[in-house]
Length: 140
Image (cartoon, one colour):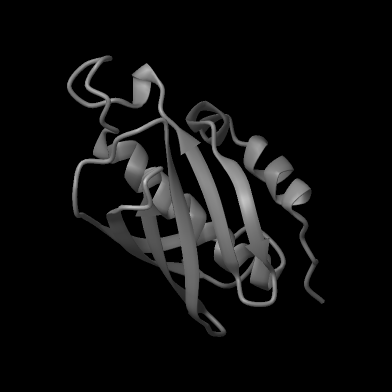
């Protein structure tokens, strides 16, 4: 039996991780039936590339957003936390602005592996990065 998650419950799980709290990730929306989930990450000086006034997100936090959104997309479908097997990131343009939005689309959740595509957009709706992640589907 899988647990049904609300935005508030997923946010509480997200906030239980010191790293996710540091990134400032906030759940914007979710659909448990399809695994669709969106999270916002605000800019802060520690997440910028090229110094604290570049206005561009460093690639590391962008990759973290992709991995976390993808992981939670599978987790809400299978009823709990799952491990990352691997993921890739393609950076399409500099990620700038006050925040980024990571949106996951679950492609498949099988007995042992789930595959998720993740789009990262800036506040103007421009696609700045894309990712694909593979996650275990056994809770634990």
